[in-house]
Amino acid sequence: MIDFSSFFSRLNTHKLARFQAHFEREIPVHFDEKRFSELATWLDAHANLPKLEAELDCSSSVSVNFKQTPTDEQKTMLDQAFRSLIPWRKGPFQIGDLYIDTEWRSDWKWQRVLPHLSPLKGRKILDVGCGSGYHVWRMLGEGANWVLGIDPTPRFVVQFELLKHFAPDSKADVIPLTLEQMPRPMDFFDTVFSMGVLYHRSSPIDHLKELRACLRPGGELVLETLVVDGPEGYSLMPQERYAQMRNVWFLPSVATLEQWLKRCGFDDIRCVDLNQTSLEEQRTTEWMPSHSLKEFLDANNTDLTVEGLPAPKRAVITAKRRAAKGS
Ligand SMILES: C[S@@+](CC[C@H](N)C(=O)[O-])C[C@H]1O[C@@H](n2cnc3c(N)ncnc32)[C@H](O)[C@@H]1O
Image (tube, rainbow, N blue to C red; front, side):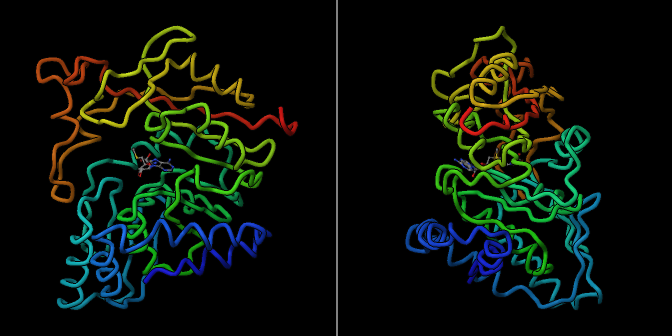
């Protein structure tokens, strides 16, 4: 079982004990085997991981290096445990000889984002919608003081725990909550990431306000989201699906996004990267065998989705929480 005890002890370390009762109430509700039928199987996989001494290298990749070569039996146990959590979307991960070739090259996104950030060394970081925690590990690799990831999908929380099994003392935690389920205001984190989440929110302005409430005054927001070309004030709302996804609400222009951020209490707003997702960055693999970007784009024109909308283009925006409270 995952008891989240390292998260709870870190609440004390960081003088966040006033939120303890909130998390004690919320976490079990959102990580409940009665609600999520496959959770018990995933937790079994986690419990059956072999006990092997290892070091986790998060500096230029996320790699578990074993101190002794695993036996054939241990290799089989590893393979089975990781396979039982398929699909693996965000990665890749190297676990000894086992390479988890995920749907996304999340390392490519990290290469686009990292050069534009205030140094992460010593920072307390929140990664909203962290998925399997690939970027949580990379933030830790930059010397963060603590990285907390939140994600409502139990499969992704267990995927993170499979890695953490080999580095239990890492200053990284993932809990199964949405941003909306976090206590408010925390006024705490030095850097807050929201990557790939805003377009899934039906109320993007509330999402920005909720991100702001997690940051300390002057703290840095790193927002990565889908955008479209267009003037200030323009945003696209798909009729129904976007690139086959049902849960996409608003694709703003960069100027609109900047305007939203300004009105939600952010300053020093910079668009630092724009990138159209390539078929090499998001694709079907052995570890995510279903349809991927190729099937979501128009077969005759990869600048359009199958619905005839602009193909996925992502912006990275950094901004600072305005210092004055309530402004
Ligand atoms: C497209 S993935 C992005 C993963 C990762 N941040 C990245 O950029 O590669 C979106 C993630 O956000 C999570 N998510 C969806 N709604 C959320 C919410 N309201 N609060 C926090 N996470 C959410 C999903 O479970 C999913 O793992």
